[in-house]
Length: 201
Image (cartoon, rainbow, N blue to C red):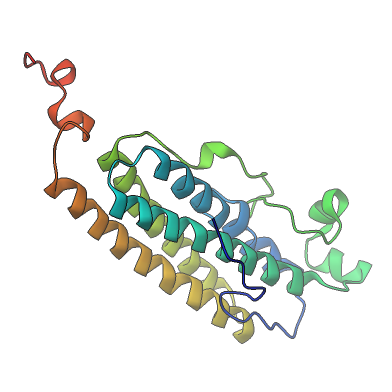
């Protein structure tokens, strides 16, 4: 299904380690609005999407989100590489380090592991695309919050790229929702299903 280019979607070249910042950024890997949840959400929803153009959008964006998971992982790895014990303690990284060392493990900023409950797949095109638009805005807001807390220019550069992609995805899902609503029919389950709207078939 995919051709994998062995390069990041955008370069991540962080000069300075910062475990405290890594604890914040990692939420965009394993948090409720992170890239791992987004990839799973869209690649799951595509199977029940009845419109080929919209299925293609879900596949494209879901695949891109896998690349974003890789970018966030690279940021976390570069922020935590070669840490001394003193740096781990000063950066408040002890709890994470105890369980995972300097391995990259999907958790949110509070240390709660990724859970599939972080994403939804309902099988109704309008419901799923509305969820997707909201998810992109929540991810954009999280990147905004990271930018407020981050003063490392190398990290900010990569985060700005990821933030902009959330905006683009929001727009693409809006276009996909218009495609669905322009073709309202029995495939849009809540709109025309007599079992739900009280009309006789």
